[in-house]
Image (cartoon, rainbow, N blue to C red):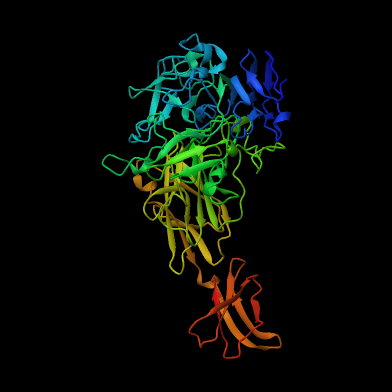
Amino acid sequence: MDDYGSIENAGKFYLGPTSQMYYYNDRSQNVIVNNESGATFTLQSDATGSATIGEIPQGLNDVYTGIFTVERYFQGGTTYSGGRWVERAYRVISSCINNGTPVNGNSVFGLNYIVGPTAGQTVTANSLTNSFITGCTGGSTSAGNPSIYLYNEKYTPSNATYVSGNFLGITNITNSTTGGTLSTSDGNTYSLPVGTGVLFFFRGAATNWSTRTVYPYIAPESVTLTTTGYLNTGPYTFKDYYTPTSSNLAYTGTGTGTNYAVRGFNMIGNPYPSGLDWQSSWSGLDGIIRTNIAPTIWVFNPVTYQWDTYMETSTSGGTATGNASRYIASGQGFIVQATGTGASLTIDEYAKTTQNNNGSVSKVSVPAGANPTGASLLMSTAPVQNAVQQSLRLKLCLDSISYDDLFIGFSPTASTGYNSDEDAAYLPGLGAAVGLASISSDNIRLSINNLPLPNQVKGEIKLFVTASRSGTYTLKRTDLQAIPQAYEVWLMDKFKKDSLDIRNNENYKFSINLSDTASFGSNRFSIVIRQTPASALRLLSFAGQKASAGAQVTWRAQNEQNYTYFTVERSTDNGATFTVLGSVAANANGVYDFLDKNPQLTTNIYRLKIE
């Protein structure tokens, strides 16, 4: 052991699935892991979680050196619903190791580990510890559609298949681990910089070739994939694999041939063997620095086939749809959106979920959702809970597994048009059974939509509703928070000429007929919000009188609630100007007063502002 407490040993070491290693405040009390001398150090993963390496302070990248073995557990299962095995689905993955040989100045990683020793085999593929992939030389079979894809913002999307247009199939991974290169369906050869997201279709283990790719297929087994290489440490600036020498993420301009629906979307991934906290990017906080990058991440949900969203809205939390949260698991890929040219995203060790505020760790505490387990692996487990916001949540359901949801929030400072700092664009699911979005005033589909409540004129929010097949579906109001009782909230169905008071009713059943375009799309449903005269806020009386301690102002109101605020103002120049004296929060009691302790020796005129 040297002065830093390092241990040299050529043995085998295992960090358990629920265990964490982290750098302690005092370096003299730390164990330095050096795998250069034949040692094998494995970060384990199973249904209980994945091993974590906590924050490594800047300048101390020699704490964990050499080759590491990293496992990543993929949840299989036998649940069959909607004509499919639920766990037989796409996942967006990334790598927390690199191969040690930079390409274009970037640390890169390979994908050979997905199939491991079964690479190049077809019907004889037989490995329970590797996964089955098709359409790729070096995979279990080169026949069939590609099982792994990259995303390219510059291409035009297509609806020809579940993944097409922006998604490029990976057709050869033979040299991706050793040489850092792979081939794709556009005829090019690329290397994957650390932090690249990869779309991967999970079919289970690399066995049973003849039944695994033939309908009705077989249930996917759980598989633990294993890769080896050098741990990713220190800060990273994300780079697109197709522009590897640029430190900017893609944002296609507004010229001919571009497509607004995908402009600025980039698929990246968590580069560390630790969960990340996306809240680290709020207003330039340490950990994640974003320039011209929206505050939203899109995480693919392998159960619903939807892109769930999380949008940070304050230092303490944000807004989520589906199963997304502020925490990005180790091995998890996700999508971010560039909002202009020169967009960049840099991440460092401080964004890991095991650090405390002074940049070092004296104890370990992983927040709920930061290290998912079981069926939630490669998914965040639960949305973060925030202060109550005036909001409405809707869910479109085929059944308990196949659904899509949206969030509509209300703020007086929000705009009705699309604003990437306030709203999250809707990304269609990959082969999802249903689709649900709200539509902004400038006709952009959104999964998170923030806008102001209407005043005297009713407000209408159009909805986009779709499905993969004709049938009966249910729109559910899953939450309605803090919207004043003065407002009625209605679901309007133009196709059936029907309506539903969704403040007092949760479910609306309806049918979609794909041969009738009026039964789905953007012109059938809308949410109408309007003030009801009977519940409107009213000022019944307002008076003032001299009091022994000053001037007493009193008033009576009707239909005021805890979201109503009264502000008392005073003028001493015959009403030419007014000065704010103070505010009173409503308590729904109807009677209020305010004491002006320092009235002036002149005529004092009082007025009341109600919000």
